[in-house]
Amino acid sequence: MDKLVINGGLPLNGEIRISGAKNAALPILCAGLLTAEPLRIGNVPHLKDVTTTLSLLGQMGVEVSVDEKLGVELKAAKVDNLEAPYEMVKTMRASILVLGPMVARFGQARVSLPGGCAIGMRPVNLHIKGLQAMGAEIEIEHGYVVAKANRLKGARIFMDLVTVTGTENLMMAAALADGTTVLENAAREPEVVDLANCLIAMGAKIEGAGSDVITVHGVETLHGADYRVMPDRIEAGTYLVAAAATGGKVKLKDARADSLDAVLDKLRDAGAKIDTGDDWISLEMAGPLKSVSLRTAPYPAFPTDMQAQFMAMNAVADDTATVIETIFENRFMHVQELRRMGANIEVEGTTAVIRGVKELQGATVMATDLRASASLIIAGLIAQGETVVDRIYHVDRGYECIEEKLSALGARIRRAH
Image 1: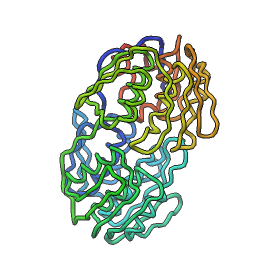
Image 2: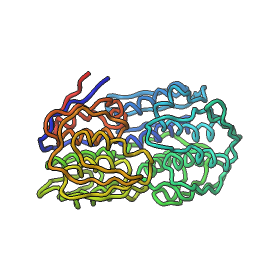
Image 3: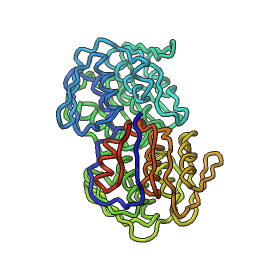
Image 4: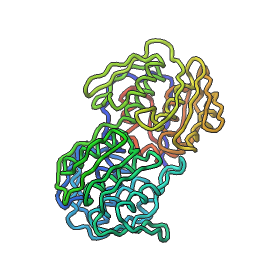
């Protein structure tokens, strides 16, 4: 199994390009099922989850072609297998996103209940309740969601929890439903807006994406389109935190500051000087690193996907920080590993208290989920001596070429088997 070997203690300096957003690319790829015409998608990141999604679509009968610039063309004219099997779905929760499009366009679907990161309960029942409200008949059989519908009907759907994939699934289903669907308490994440923009480019009628009420006027059919995936805000945030934690100076190209307000505010509080343009963000650490307390909550508040990275940075900051996690109940699995490197962190329930220490010591640590791995890599970059991060297949699910990008910024990092 691959590991990353890091010799820390150097500031990150230089310029890198941010990849397309995994969490926008996956639903947009699934949207290819909604039309018989070709959907061409640019800026798709080269990641394990993307490869899994393309294999899943290919297995259903979608014609998939990838060009040398990682543009993907999908043609779902002859979809003959309306099943997403457990083997494909178990590694990646986002596979549930084929459910809405399949029921909407083909009137049936059989999708395995998902797997993915072990960071807590993420119920699929909101997806199911929403589709039932639109007239689908749904049974759970042998670990599969089995859905049937003649044509989905528009409905008013209130989601009692904010769910990103739930909002995306129901928005895709509603695009081809008969009548108007109103999604209340919808997720406001930029990735939801990106999917809505792609669907609009395909001929869907959607209003309100980015707010908590999304209205979708169903149409008979959608057509093909050319669409470019937004930059990955979590990848950008991760490199900015790594630069701040190491006392460095970096410029990120193809990055959007408007999707990162909460993260940039906290980095400024930590002592970073940040400048932004339409498609770039630069960060420079001038003074000492200050502790920053934070509380995760749905967008536009501080993202749960950046919590672990900030904890690694806080481990060596001046003073004490409190981190409150409100989204996933097992999202502190990196704490144990950071402690092995000398971090002073105490956890009680959903709150972690981090008292900054002078330095971290390199150690062998194990990644438990995608963002935990990013926090351990940041810890390795600031630690004295050698850090080995084991089980980095998690990292490869969400970060494209992470060791190449960090090396380009001057980090001493390599992949070992």
